[in-house]
Amino acid sequence: MEKVASITVFDGKTERVISLVQGDLTELGPNEAVDLLLTSAFPNDYTPTATSLIGALQRSGLSVAELARDKAVDLRHTSGFWLSHELADRFTWRGARRLAVFEPRDLGSPPEAVGALFRGLFPFLSDREDQRVAMPILSSGDQRWSPLVMMESLLGASIQWMRRGLPISELMIFERNSGRIPLLKALMDQLGQGDDGSATPRAALSVPPPRAQDYDVFLSFSSHNANAADAFKNELAAIDPARTVFDFRLAIQKGKSYQDEIDRAIESCRRVVSILSPAYFASPECQEELNIARLRNKRSGFGLLIPLYWRSISPGLPLWLQTLNQCVCVEERLDQLPVAAQDVHASL
Image 1 (spheres, one colour):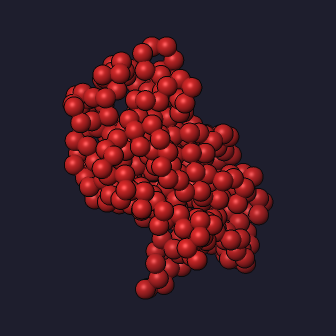
Image 2 (cartoon, helix red, strand yellow; image 1 turned 120 degrees about the vertical axis):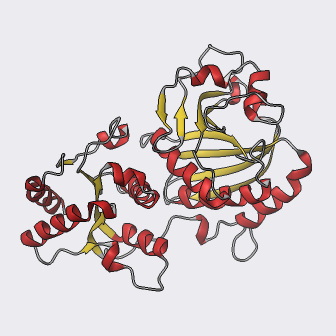
Image 3 (cartoon, helix red, strand yellow; image 1 turned 180 degrees about the vertical axis):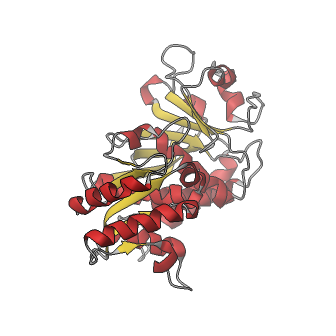
């Protein structure tokens, strides 16, 4: 097991590292154990094949099928992930504290799969402490994606999330095939270089610079809940007509990059109000906005993100959302929106 390349990402307070490791994940022992090991599987299929990480773990004394029979958290219906209980002394192999298994119903293209992976990982990360995470180049074994194509998508997404403050101190990406290492290392070296060719992290590897506050409120909502968004805006305007609200239906000009404009608006607003409902959590775009807001909320010392609980969510809100002060308007209580708008206005 050897680290052959790394990229350092700076989020404004903390340096975070992405490492390429040549070797087998099962070589991790108790002294190098990570907090979380990521692996992927076909839905409900934990067959220990010769080419999969699940197979390698089985041969090292850890049964993913056994872990799957008693999951600690099962979010496959919303995020494609489930989380194991702590391994502790239950198995011979103890290279990780827990396993997070990615089982999307539809894998999609590499960028789509990686986007779903990072969105799905968020509920298992803590806002209070950073974690060390290890993974293979997902979906390049039995699921047959090109390792180089998948690695490029993984690096692009991990750099973008870690520069925003994703609470991972080190992401270790393992490759056991030594023949693939030169191309993977060259890709790492290219992405980790400064604009002048030096190893100094370039702007793309650092937190976005502070911006002037363009909006008082960034309103994050599913188009299925547009009535709630419009009613909230009306209530806020009735309290103070000067308050500015980012509404994606009105604020993004034709020809502009949707994701860039969303990023810019969340980085420049004073508060993010997320209207939570089953439709919200079913939307990849809404989950992306919520995750970006979660990280900026942490960087800002908390208080930025205000969930507006609009419709009940089964089996319940993620634990990290439950810890935030909420505006509760379930089930679709329009009569509670004036109170919610007053609370948000008072926080500005």
